[in-house]
Length: 134
Image 1 (cartoon, helix red, strand yellow):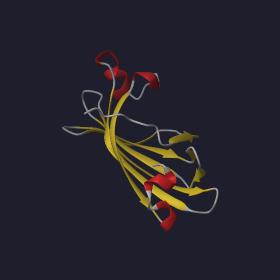
Image 2: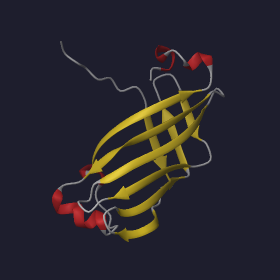
Image 3: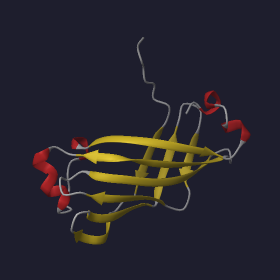
Image 4: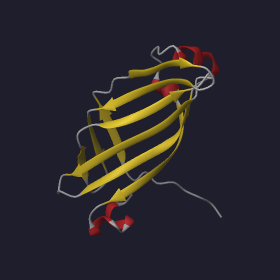
């Protein structure tokens, strides 16, 4: 048995900035908020825009790993809407961990993500994954 993956949609976020919420604290890490004021969701048969602003809550651990908890609402061009919540982790090569911990820029191509998205739909036509190709 083989498993294959198929790209179903893409989320593009723009206007993203990082806001420091909590400074380094013992045993946990640094809390930062990443508001995503602009963005879009693009699929083979649909397109939509982010509602208000999405938010990505991150906790940066001592080893540079980030715990990710992100939420985004989208309104599709045809008026339907959906909500996506993502939890996971993001890692960087060990030589970049200190840069991440200090909030310095790191090439996004060096990040490795493992996440689990949960999708809520608010229209019967989106209940069938084949209709939206999620």
